[in-house]
Length: 243
Image 1: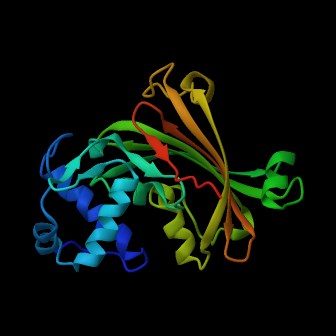
Image 2: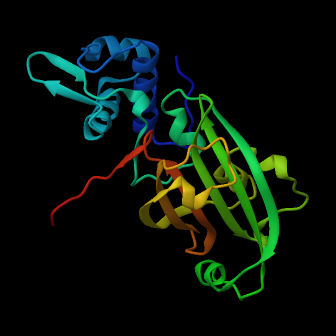
């Protein structure tokens, strides 16, 4: 039976388990996936919970239902399609695809907040912040480049560069800081403009930039981040409603 995280809603855990099953089973677009009863037995869950996970995959256009015939795979799970409405770490995002993430912590430095940083983090210009610069790899391919900026007074001592190789959200939770929501601006840039000093990142590759301010449960800004997602590997989706 798959190991599951109590902190994540069960429907998302089942969705991730289903993705792992499809990846490990070598399913390709057009293939029929196992029946509900077979999946219930494989994942050891109730039928109602299973259907919640299947519904999420249908919303993401990864599977679709043909009435009277069953469910079929539409998109290859390794295309890395992510739900933009969910606030989750890179590690959590890729774990749903059974991908082992490796991280290069390129730089961690203390610096004074300029006007832009101060405005987004609710600080005074010149206050100390910590800037964490990282490159994330999936199966040896650099697919995410990020800069996370936090107020220095939120960082527990002692700290060192290596501790930031894992999930930043997890580290903050260990410090008693729980993120609740984010304000995000999305645009597309080319790699030449963002990471010219990283020779491992190909030139002229399109990157999806998520410029974000992440807030805790009290509405206090905690992280000002620039997350560049490689556009030829990653796509985002969001459900929009007409009210």
